[in-house]
Length: 207
Image 1: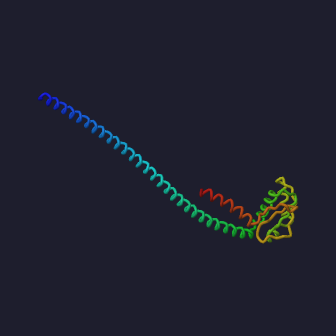
Image 2: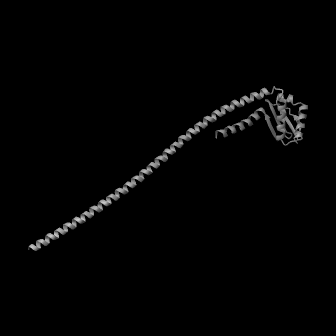
Image 3: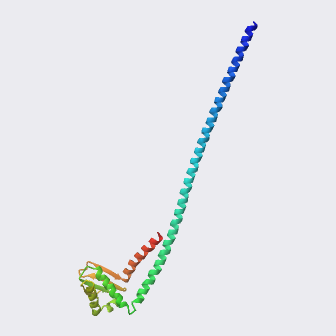
């Protein structure tokens, strides 16, 4: 009977020891799995945080660019306004100087230049000149003959005559004999051409 009790005690002890070992293994495995899950969760959280930071930085850069773009446009708008105001003052000053120049003795030579420019611009052997009131006085027969001679020296043989029409401003308008082509060298036309050139130069400077 005593032997049976000893065998039973031994069996119980083995069962307890085995249960303890199994329990410890299960606990270790559970702790290991928990550590792995925590590590993966930490890595995922770090990745998510990094993505959020990148997105925030990208949005901040986009906002910065929009602000800078708006500032640049406003500055450019102000520059354009100042440029136009400055050009207007320059053109008005030039117009006044041209009008004053009409009273100068050297103006006759300038009229010659205006007519020669028209001769070069028109492909015609006969050209009528529509002059301003003062230009009509200056463009007498002798001066017209002198301009024709100068044109011939430049390899352009041309016959010049004055139109019955008169410009309401300074300068001249050149018209081919058939009336199909014309070259406007009046003061206002010259100003428009110079305005375009000067405005383009100013725009390039602004970038």
